[in-house]
Image (tube, rainbow, N blue to C red):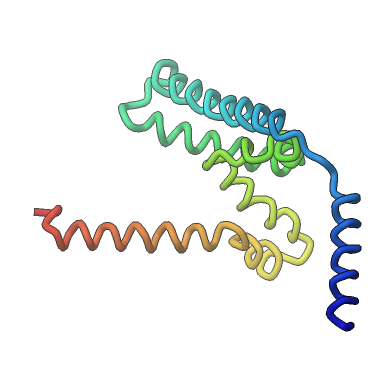
Amino acid sequence: MNNDKKTAEHRRYDRMVKAMTPGSDDLHGYIRAFWVGGLICAIGQVLSLFGEKVLGLPEGSDGMFTSIALIFLGVLLTGLGVYDDIGRYAGAGSIVPITGFANSMAAPAIEFRREGLVLGVGAKLFTVAGPVLVYGLSASIAAGVAWWLIGGMA
């Protein structure tokens, strides 16, 4: 009897969740994610060409310029509260690696700034991005050691 009661409660809960959960239009979500992500990438390409052609940056420096500019734009839009609106509209299209990473670094720092520089900003800065950095650094070290061991450095 106790299992029957739990099962009935679970079914009632499942019905309530289905009734309360807003529907989603997958096709429109995919299209929004695609065009917003593509627009962010196109802005990156324009910045790269601007650095190369207009600013006359040496070969290879246009990529650094583009990265810095996209990180700046991501943090600026996060600080102004615009990146959240973009994320709600575009979903996964807003997490194009460099701007999404900038947003994930800036958002917790901005949110917890009232708790102080050390316990607020410093402690929360790497909440989301910390594991990404740890994995990325660990994987790159492991790949470098493996490459060195198989003779890639010779």
